[in-house]
Length: 107
Length: 411
Image (cartoon, rainbow over all chains, first blue to last red; front, side, top):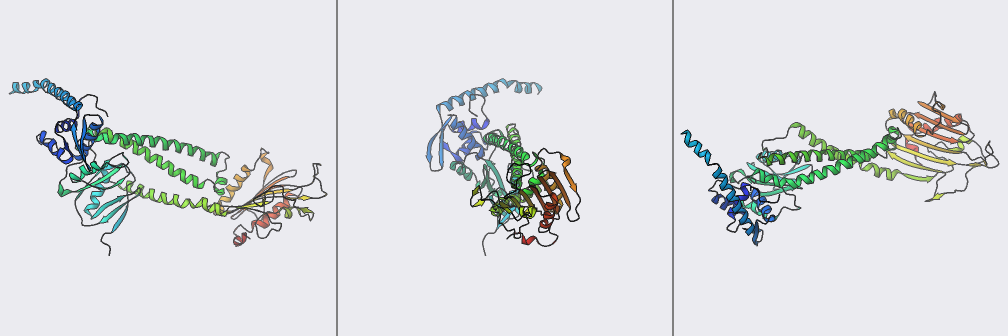
């Protein structure tokens, strides 16, 4: 599946977010937990799948190869996509404000 | 004593059932048997201390799973164990509390996409190949309506067993495609792999059946080899020896009958006067002969030239005597050339189990069975049918099995 600007999966979003700082494998999994406030514990299989797909789509690129270890970083294109997704999510949240308002009324 | 002992188990035949395999490996580890290798039919386990292990199967369509993927898995506590084609097995001790390989079902469905396409192409190819093979085999077996004849001659037995195997492969390939497709759909909808699925008795039975089936196919591979060894064609000797073959001289009973100089020689064999041997699992002794002679100074009664009687014979010693009856029926069909069916006359003979005779001027055909022996004679000449039947009666004793002479058939 090539990324064509539609909504991202949660895994894609957090990997992009974590790759604002170049990172690799195990540490990347940690920083994903960090940026998601421990909410996301991404398995290595999911992470690998997301990385190889996003690399193909040009959202991230290899920053360094050290033996079997590959360090990735977000590309300009990735930054744009992340920004777009962020705005999309933000408006989603804004649109959902009525839920909280509804809750307040019931109290 | 060896440190570790290997244990072989018949593995589930349905290689695509991921949850069931993972479960099975975990059950085995609890018994102290650690998966070491995963073959097409057997899994190898190594004996060790019983332990709670987690096993996960990951799919990679690449020729070899990338190193950095293995590295990433190892860093998270998942060690690569073995693979069966696209299915990679990883393990991790339960106490290590390693994270699941896949924490996102929708993402996992992408790993299956290419496999799904590959299996689909495979299935289409094998199903088409199977239909083609079935079509060809059906023609071989049934086009002439003589399946028993084809069975006895034994040309098509091995191909048929092989075709059954290819057919089974196509069936398996179809099931794999359907299952993987369903799995992908489930994952896309966020339903994870069912890790509580287990093998039932039927699955185990089927897997064992596949092993037995494969052994049968392996054994059947000797059929064509035996046939090649047993098949030979040689010039018929002038003297008969112990061959259970009806000879032209014995039918003609004319001292002036001589064999002409060979017209067509190939590989040192006179093909007008030859005998061929063949072998089949249902008829281990088979002869096929042609013979022709001339009588100088004698003419055909219609004046068409020098009298030159000929004989063609087929001889079978069957493994199962009960097949003789059907073989005769098929032989009649096989050697029937648009003649009037009523001219094939069923006769009673005190020394033969079955006797069918056809006669039209110089052309005579005799089909006879006794015990394990079946003989067909097609004769073109002036001698009468009775002399042919008498000769068959004499020769069929050598192969009928009723008088222990069967061992003497070769010279």
